[in-house]
Length: 194
Length: 71
Image (cartoon, rainbow over all chains, first blue to last red; front, side):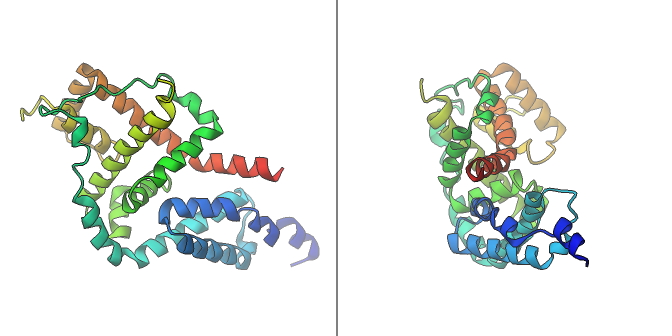
């Protein structure tokens, strides 16, 4: 490769380093384990440096790195899926923990509040910090499955395959995540001045 | 439970499930009917939709922040 080519198309290692913090954040949303998250980010940056000439330049460096990171995270999830299958049963035992929201006839004990035009929150940086804290408040498996569904965009068949959990369990965990995040955002954001 | 009259508790499960799989025709109709009549559940439905939009933008928000800090 000529000098000119090298400088114009190759991604420099310091450019990659700039993304370390946000890659780590992404990995933590899925893995919830600092050591594992650091490992996958390190592997991602190494793979990126080694494969820098494969970077086509038609997507952003960030998108390219996130693509590599997704694979590394899924590898990590697969690696420890056997240990986690046991945990998921444990998580599931408390799948009725939203019972308190409903009365004995299955209706909401307190009618869920109106959020108005919630999308205005999406342009506020603080909102995403609150959402992240709400995610951190979920049980690890619930958060992992929800992140695979909503951030990675995997369908439930893929999630079942990667995590070794059944479709039914997956549905339960996604339900729990949505209900818990709804309550958390209601408390910490939309209803904070109520 | 009656097939066509869902409780809010049942409706909340189906409301979540419609984001992950195609509901059966009966379930879909029962849910639509419930959402039309129940203010609380239709709010929850809109809140779940919002949650999906928010999650899809979560990483962009991180990128903006990094950019702001770096520059």
